[in-house]
Length: 403
Image (tube, rainbow, N blue to C red; front, top):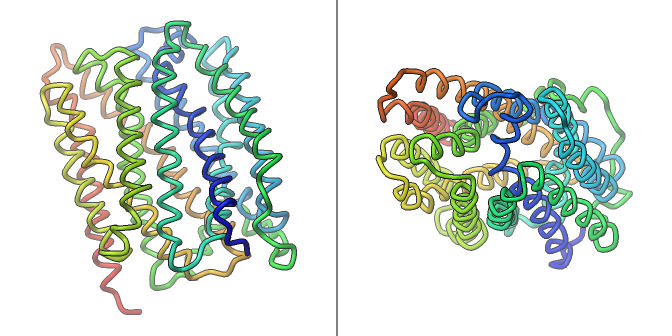
């Protein structure tokens, strides 16, 4: 096992650059969906959940496969193939002529987007019990920094058309591949690799492995509920702020950059401190309390500037996932980390499949009334808060169980 700071820096930069590519396309995505579907941006909300869900659907099926392949062949080759595939797919989506082609492009992106599984397994390989939660927090910080840079660039690029961000995202991903090819070292020695097992390399087989974690198995359900609630904001942010506060694509890009800064500060600078002071269980509990309160308040606020007030406290929900991931990953062998991270990614992907479809349907239905009452725009956020509350109750019950 490698315990090199350089190895950690290499993979974090790789994650950050990959995140920049994802963030760049967010501000212009609703516009591109409306163009390829030949409907107004407002009407495109009907299709946006389908496009977003397609990406997550493919991640759900391929994350365990990617994780198990990395346990067999090592992290480096699997991660590099995924990053290169993502770059080429951005080129594909840049030239997608219709909504069907855009959906196909998102499906391919979901396959290669499972690189996060390998990246987190890499982090687990090079971490110790003392710094594992902190390092997983750094993964979130790397994504956060990427989402500072990505949406900001994406908002500016909308002046050049809705497809320009996809071309730039492709450049970032391909440069990421080149960078990783020369600097990324292998973290899983040949002696620690295990035989590939197809039964364990699919989401259903992977979920069966959850029973091995008898005491902590319900923490996987907590992660699912947290991600179901959290991913709703990813789907709703553009439409909610544009419809309720009349924000432009540039405004959305700037706001998401601020979200990225907040998450980078919390996950990169504060998560290690909070986990050290409160413990992994206490940090996860605190994060859920912030998620419950901020999502409810987001649905109630009357002015756009108030979103900025809520962004930083909302960012504290970012300590939930690394805290729980650290709790569980400390219980498995090195050659099972890829499989475990694949389970986590599949759970997150399942939430990403259901969340856009479910919450965009709620949003579309709630805003069809003309004139639309202001409170109706916030209905999906109230549902998010309720789901987060269920996750809080389940977390506390699980942590008190004696098995």
